[in-house]
Image (cartoon, rainbow, N blue to C red):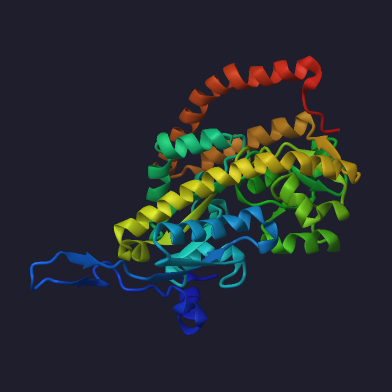
Length: 380
């Protein structure tokens, strides 16, 4: 949608009032006993925001992140900073949350940066890079490796402040009507897959589409798409994809981690008292940690349940993985077409290379030893 038309529509509709915010810093301040030399008493202002999510309520963990943020912010501000979460499509279209926050139609949104790849490839680093870092590496890069500062420079151009909004961990490779046995099986296959992963799939002959979560099941059921990726066993079982198709490919090489973000309109952020900004940052950090642990706890029993329902977990064949890796690297190189994107890409790759050494030395070898002992996980 053209940004000017979007802003005009928002101003004419109900969306223009959705960022209803109480007085800015300084308002709500009163002094008692001042004439008698008594101390000044500061009353924090009341602030009410509506949050636009990209995710339907049915996704539970993804949507619940916004609810958790709202609850913690309210608790940290004695209920004076209220955030009302709204599921994808309730306030704005699910894939236009960044647009709405940028325009000021809503003060805060919960979304995935790679949904907006068409605006700038730099936004993909907020979410996922094909064959990139897994969740703990990505989180370490964002918090301690300069990733947050670099991605914020990208968001500055949109008038948006970015906060960590959760991570799903490594995702599955998605649901297919027929197993992919070789690279040739991907040609002319229509698949719901966003981000750079979708562009890499296009290099392999796939017709990639970006659909919001609430539309995927219907498209798969109608035959409008031949395959879809979403998240992992827990979310995918809730979405009911197993009722339509039974082939469940792995791994989701395009999303070795999938970081989500809370985007806040810069003007609204600047109006907040410092303690409210701190509450938002603290709450977003909690959401970020809790989401990943929740997925780690719930994906295992969900996978077992799917296999019991007749789902077949199938690895992508070696020729697909090799071609996907080559296409992904070339796409990343070509997407870094300006100085800032090149700086982001170099920082990301350097951090991945350094932390891969440690993860390969300690955790991967431990996992291999565990599996060779006969106790490793089996998916089929």
